[in-house]
Length: 169
Ligand code: CUA
Image 1 (tube, rainbow, N blue to C red):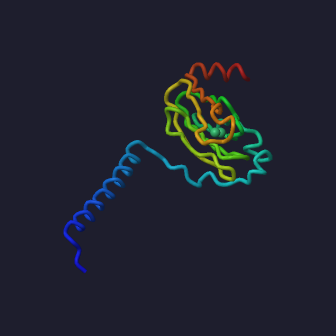
Image 2: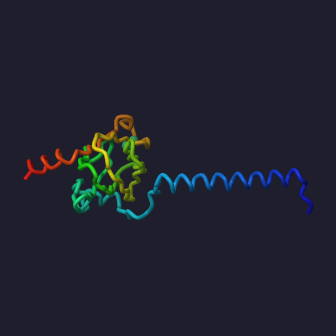
Image 3: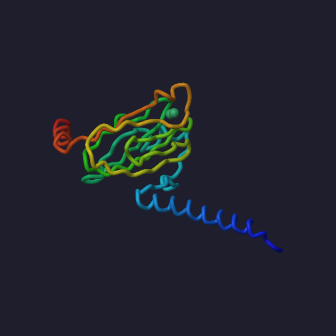
């Protein structure tokens, strides 16, 4: 079979573009530390969420000197817990699930942006190097209150955090 030379040129051109696009994505992923949310968080039946040891009591838990875990449930139309409060410089792993419909969880200004799918636990880790208030959005349409579904992550400066801890005990 003979391939017309223009057709050949287009084929080569298309291949070059495909390779270019894939390299671009690979490069940006490597450089900016984009991380895919995968199946590592595991699964949970939506009916079991409220009885689950982690999600029955949604909370922020300190698991190391600068390490925290957040067990979060997305509901129509709030996140629990909210706000999430951690100290500056902490590494926080979020485990997020939903017992009703698909939600989203995006922390503005960070690389946290995941779908929250009933039956699945989204696991995502982020380091908060700068104190401040970070806005949280639900970015999957989840019903009538979707547009108002938002939350907050408050990253406290070290001294403020220590004061808070002292006050609690
Ligand atoms: Cu929850 Cu949109």
